[in-house]
Image 1: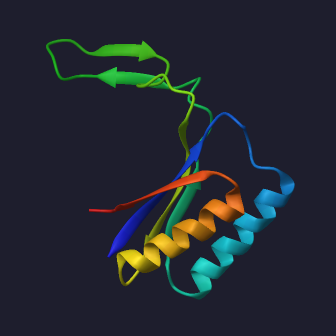
Image 2: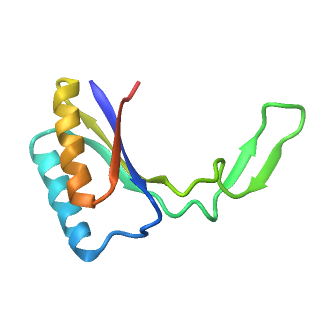
Length: 107
C-alpha cells in the first residue's frame, strides 16, 4: 500500500539547516529500507494561482485555493506493508522536519 505523508507548515517557514540534515538522513533511510517512492517540497502558497474551469468560463484567481495559517509544505509518497508502519514513519517524519504530518492512503 502506498501512503501520502504530508508536511503541514504553520507559518514557521523553511526548514533550518539542522532540520534539512535530519530530513536528508530520513530520506536516505526511506530509500535504504525500500519505503521511498517520491518526495518533494512546496513553496509558500502566497504566489499560488487557483484555476476553476468547471463552468462556462475559466476563473483564474491569484492566491491559494484556501486561506489558512497552515499549508502543505511538502510530502513523501511511501510504500509500507500496513498503516501501522506508515504511521510510525509519519511520526519519524514529524520529528525530523519539526512539523505536523498527515498520513493518508495514496489511491
